[in-house]
Image 1 (tube, rainbow, N blue to C red):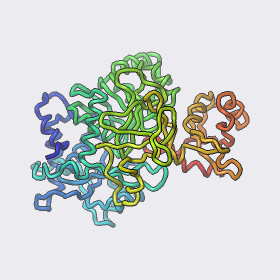
Image 2: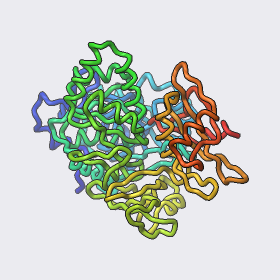
Image 3: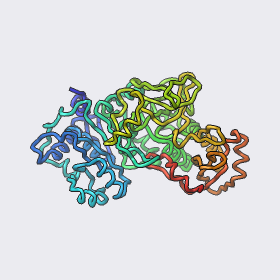
Image 4: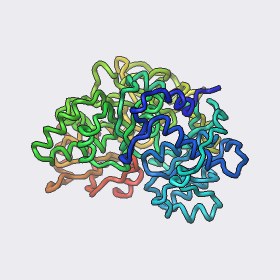
Length: 503
């Protein structure tokens, strides 16, 4: 029988009663209380079904980050269901897409989040369960416990859609176990850890790296309904966390909040941040200036890592040892990784190519998309679509092969390299580089930028500045100044939406 997450919760019932499992500001639940709460959710899901398991039926999860969300996820699994986390920011149309694509049969929802779900659920005949009502059920049950194993599907995570229509990534219980065991070992998790959770809970970053690895380790997780920079700074002192994980956008906002604070608060914020043992950045490239500024403010060199929905985490800078700015480190425990050319031949150090990954953490396939699943693998290796180079065993990402590797005048150019340079321009606060089709050059290098308050920027001046720092074929020949770059929930810039700016 597989070692599932509710099995792990049972094992944690022996931890000290005063050690919380999850807390969202309403009071902490111990592991025993979380187990009881998840049983109440399972009992409600199974009501009317004769006590039998859900047998992999898809259950939507539209609940604010907090104790109820965690109990909902575990309750779905205890009932034998297949959880489909839904983004809180999704409008009705996108919720309908997820419900249709997943073929969900029911949904757990918070009262405040019901409105955009009501019509799609009614039109599809879905059973909608209020999570608060489920948690107030009279008698918890464990009738379905143990009816899932490693091969059974656990999570249906929809890709961010940065390059097209979101696809459902099927992660099994075995995939999740491999992912959290790898992170527990690599990042030194223990039951004494306490982590702050401010990330969206419909992607693996927040779900796996933070919540599930915390539970697996017997640690404590303090969840917030949304990110707020001042709240996080104060939580570093008030909550006394040992770990913090976020995306580069969040670290940038924290830096700006620190700079806007009073001198007394700055001193207090920095002192509190220095007490954490580990801070991690991922889900998008971390600009080196942000890494350097964060180190100045907190003493922490952010640990950069690399992963994606389909594979969990694959590469990481070390917990102990030198962390190289701009790199994503070495393969994590249990991960096989290689760089290959277009024909699938493995490349050596100093040669750039596509990253391919194999191992027990790699997903089983895309939901009901056999052709996409087949095309995603080559001889058992998952083709990530990311281009990287290995130097002395350490990997550095060059970008997505589809959107971040441009070909201009016969030269291959990394958009990420150009972006790293542009972010050092005094007038630029954020940027994204894309390729624009050109009859003579194949592609032109085009930059969309957000600028600092009170600044202005013209193309000719930018080109002159760039020519002192980049090869001429890498210098942008198109410029668009925007109020805000289009981003998804994890802060990744949606580059396909930038192309019309340059048409």
